[in-house]
Image (cartoon, rainbow, N blue to C red):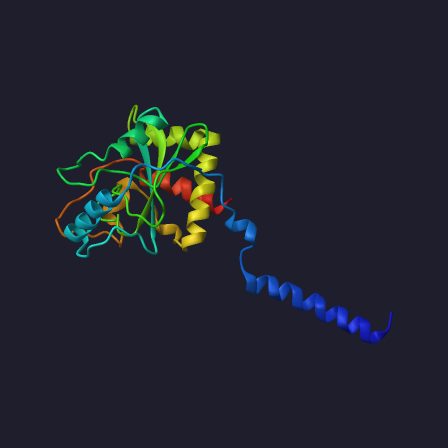
Length: 221
């Protein structure tokens, strides 16, 4: 092969890896897991309620979720997907205020990921963080306590695998830092926490020790 051609090849060999480095994570890293849409009713009335809630607790009137910076892990405290979905759909007052609670996703024990609400909408799932957090619920009974329940999920391969895929996708899509993937029990200590009414979270789901294990698995994916 002519010397000129060999030189050209050497340049290509050097340039291609450089381009790969500049490009960062591959498209496969951002792969969206299979998600089943099963939306709860969230029309104009509920959006207005969420906007009013945001004004009272965060100081600005909006139902829109823009640039989420936190992902909060929860478990449902019940044994079925339908019970959690129906609770979110009911839009019943919580702590005497509307709207009712909800989360963006519920992951069933069989690994099915259900989207409850569009990601551009705020849900009441963690006091002090709803203005900037996505909520991921996992179907699991409380049983012997929060740590026990967390471990059931971590040991249920098909479910935890689906949750990890979902959280990885959300993390990369919204550029959420690993330290801002937290359990509900950790919400009060988040740097993003704020509540003008002085409310605090009292939930114990997803203990710090179990979130640490979750993050470790997420890093290793």
